[in-house]
Image 1 (cartoon, rainbow, N blue to C red):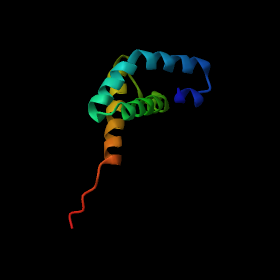
Image 2: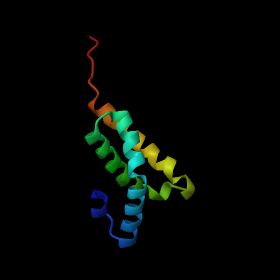
Image 3: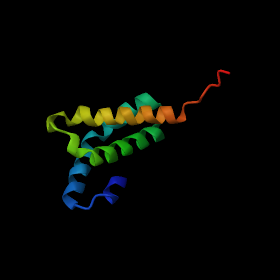
Image 4: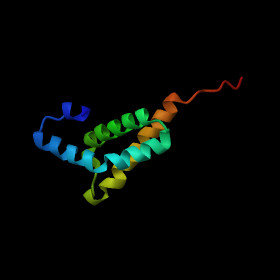
Amino acid sequence: MLYAAVIDDAEDIKKFEKIYYEYREQMFFVANKILRDSYEAEDAVQNAICTAFAKRDTLREPEKFKPWILRIVVNNCYDLCRKYRPTVDLA
């Protein structure tokens, strides 16, 4: 897991591994539903885990973790869609 390389504390690594294994199927399902590409969905999930770790201090209510992490996945998917969306020249 990529995020484990940037985490120094072994306890934090265990926490995020637990999160990853608990929510990965739901995160992948949401990402694959939006992107319709399993490889891009895997990238979106990995990016969501890294983003969640980086912004873990912004989560005020731990009981709302699931919708928070799924929203991060959705936002990552939309970012990927915008990145690869073809542009149309209207001129």
